[in-house]
Amino acid sequence: MTNYALRVPDSLFAYVRKVAEEDHVSMNQFFVMAIAEKVSALKTETYFRERQSRGEPNAFDAWLKASPEAEPMAGDELT
Image (cartoon, rainbow, N blue to C red; front, side, top):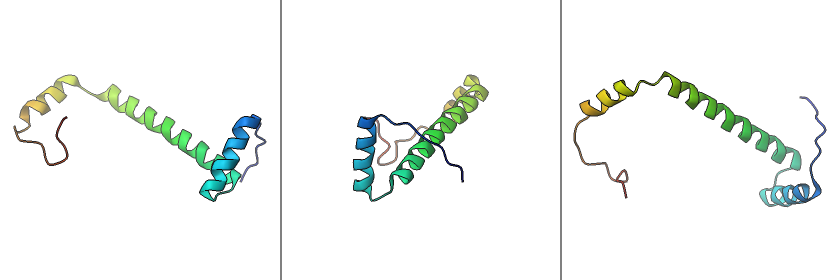
């Protein structure tokens, strides 16, 4: 485990303290979870950008044309 001194503006610190208390977690745990969520979001974005770069629009169009014409399943309807 590594320690890191973090400078947080007073107003944000007060809000984090309040939210952490409401969630019954320590402020340390709150900060670690927030960092983990951000890292996860960035990794997910990178993954989808990489997948997009490998996509072939013509292959997708062919896949759509080969799909059967059917009504959407319950809950999948477009509004």
